[in-house]
Amino acid sequence: ILNVEQSPQSLHVQEGDSTNFTCSFPSSNFYALHWYRWETAKSPEALFVMTLNGDEKKKGRISATLNTKEGYSYLYIKGSQPEDSATYLCAFPNTNAGKSTFGDGTTLTVKP
Amino acid sequence: KAGVTQTPRYLIKTRGQQVTLSCSPISGHRSVSWYQQTPGQGLQFLFEYFSETQRNKGNFPGRFSGRQFSNSRSEMNVSTLELGDSALYLCASSLALSGYEQYFGPGTRLTVT
Image (cartoon, rainbow over all chains, first blue to last red; front, side, top):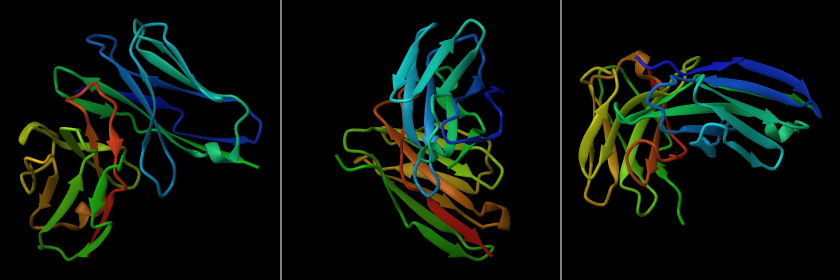
């Protein structure tokens, strides 16, 4: 059984705060790690595909880093805005099993 | 480019009935995966189809089945519905099997009474 864990489970921050959360995954047989944002009443939307150890990807105020040797990825949001409120999911594609395992997500609420 | 579409969006069924959900992937995508999300649970993998073949199956009973057609459209069937099958069912398409980012549809909200 493949364990993909995300922490914290939920986070409440004030508008303007910066925040980060973690995705832990098995460090062996690494192929890629995906981050998704899932807003209420919408579909999950791909944010980043992380493939190389030390990768850092950025999209506006959101960035992600990857450490494949220790099996974790961080997602950072700088200056959170209410529109950043969503559940952030990471997914670990297991090429041996041929499927992606999703973490349970971190639900971020940004209060104005 | 049109996104992933799912029909119906909402469905109410009674215990014991069966249901079929449909998913049309993004044009050119050959892989379709199905997921179940229940309150308090993350996305649970149901199965993945690629080129009309089921490539992987999650840990769900045999009441859950699916298929994929030559145009990559996929259907998921649940027979003998139970109350616990009430959930949001999401399908996602990707260019190929695992490793590629997935594009999700809006989901079908199934309520079993």
